[in-house]
Length: 278
Image (cartoon, rainbow, N blue to C red; front, side, top):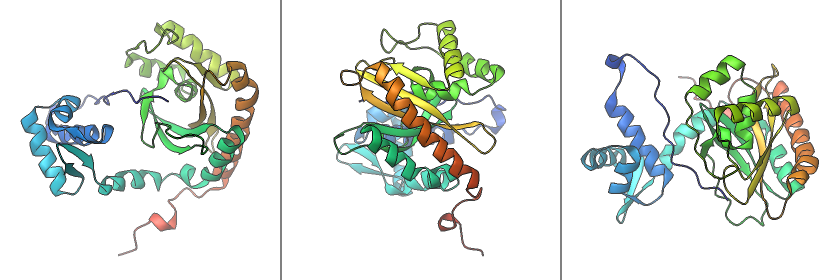
């Protein structure tokens, strides 16, 4: 399917006296381990942008805290890292109500489907569902992709105000993944405007040759785009017109059901995730 690009999150400008460089490096190393199971010390250092000596000390510390583990010459994350993810997911009514609808639309389309949220100029997949015929959809939960070159990302960019969109695009460097990728900011803005008018996004091999996708917004109780529901298909099997006429209606119906459930969902986290009172 699609390989996750090795992007690094941007750090907002803050007072240098408030910035903890060692913490930034530690998180960069932990993120690097998570991107490539079994990466060596040298590979992790290069991915995180730190020296091998610094990476080694950080990995020893993370291993001592049970966040990573050395296996042979490589390093892998330990289950404890899920504490961060569960803390986020447990606060999201979306993950509590969307599961059955996501499963249903994946079965209806017989294609990989997922829900993604915005993270600056990227999207992050927080839920996914695939029919059994998919042996290896390489889009695990937590995968990040550039928003501008994905259908789900375009849906979320289209939901921004003109001022917010300009601010996000100012941070963007367009990479030409394929000959179909937008080549300029003007071309990208035009495609986002089209998504605003249509209410959905189609992507024809802009991220990877042989891959098409479609997406629609999931709205919160105030009618704002909270996330994007999308599907990814094989371009040799599914024409772009079939995405428009079949996938989009199915995705819209599922997104509407999720949005309706969200309007009735409690705002607070499910009880199973709450800490007991002290």
